[in-house]
Length: 202
Image 1 (cartoon, rainbow, N blue to C red):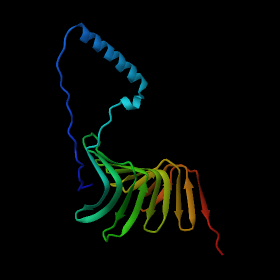
Image 2: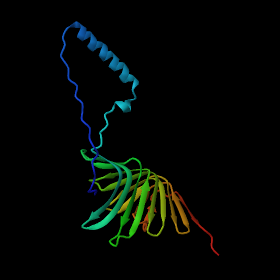
Image 3: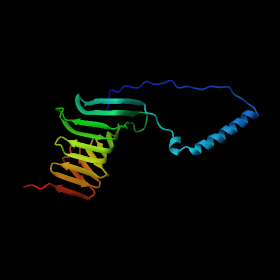
Image 4: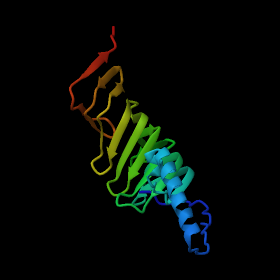
C-alpha cells in the first residue's frame, strides 16, 4: 500500500572481543557472575526480558499519497511510523496517532478516520485504530469509538466496542457488534443495545 519511505541513519554495532582464561579463579568468577545474573533477572519485569522486534524502518512526520493504477486512493499523515517487514504478518505501526483520508476518482474526500494509535496489516489490507477513534464521511456523519477496524477489500468497518453516531439530527449509540461500509451509508449493530435520539421540530 505504501510506496516511498525514507530510512533513518543506522549506527554501527559494537562487538566486544577478549582473551580466553582457564583455571579455578576464572571458574569462580563464572559462578559468581551467573549468580548475579539470576538475581538481577528475578528483579526485572518479565515484559522487559522478552526480546522485542525492532522496526525495520522508522519514519518521523510521515505523509504520503497512496495511488492505485494512477488514481489517488488515500492520504496518510502520522507523527511516527514504524515498519515491520520481516515478519510472517508484516505491518505498519502508528504509535503516536494518524489521519487517513480516502478519495474517490475525482479526488473528493469520501471519508476520514483518525485515532491515537493505529496499525496497517499489509497482506490482509486491514486497518486497526484505537483510542479516540473518529470517522467522518462526506455527508458530515460522525462515528466515535475507542476501537475500529477496516477491511479495504470488503470496504467494511466494524467494532466490538461502544459506538456513537451523529447523523444529521439523529444520535445513535450501541454497545458493540457494529458493522458498516466506510461511508456509513449502510450500517447495523449486531448487538441490539442502543438508543436513538431525534431532536424535536416544529
